[in-house]
Length: 342
Image (cartoon, rainbow, N blue to C red; front, side):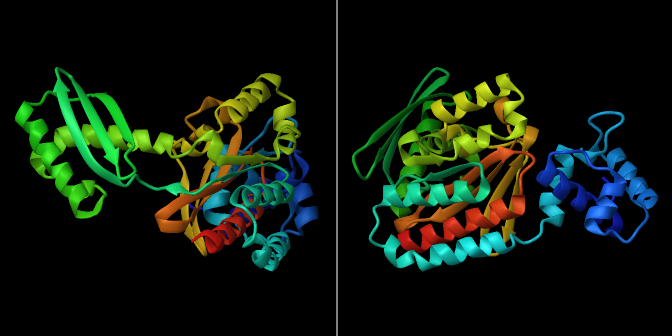
């Protein structure tokens, strides 16, 4: 995609803001009038046509104005996002004033309160998870090979046993034994496995074990019991969802029956933005692997808990949502949780 001129950036930003506020396509004349752009409608129209050719805007109907495309939202989030504004500042002050009260609040009540405030602020679905270990504190691992299958048994320091049955590349018994010894040595050194120093001779079999290991613990680190979801009513009230019954039905089923998938999914594309004060993940539309989320935007902000645990604060809505307010609000909630639980 070609670089945008300052004028084109201004027009894209104004179009996104207008559509977020009104859910209506916008004309060049409306942009000039509402945002006081220092240009004629014809100049703005030319910029909109160029943005459409670049895939950043689209025309839902021939006679209608233009609205942002998925790619347009992506560029807006990655390059044009303003600060959260007064709403986020008010939320920050409110939460900071309640920190002393929060210290005497149980974790479940705290998560419910913060998820509720986040849902109120955004008008969308807010998700907050309990902090869980980023990776398990393993004590030992054992492997047994049988043909093309490998049984991987892991025991943590709490005595819990996890068994994985995986398909692996052809390997000699001594290869399995040598990899098992390397894994044991890693665990004895620090209870974590540093896959970056995997010896070359173990790489083929080791990568298969690493993939199974990572997939299992990524999926099991988030559970329904460890998540609070508030604001479903606000989510389904969005025009993108109440106008499409099949889309709404599938989304409700995902939220009610498999909410952990919302946070454990690894999208095909996702902006991971290192902005002050913390990391954030934003995935938009068809960047999600789950077809049910193809019309959605998802903002996720991690927070650190006690002894290296990690939780998530997230907001789910349509692609057409106020990303600057949502990101700022989610960061504020994550900051409070991290301060109280670290």
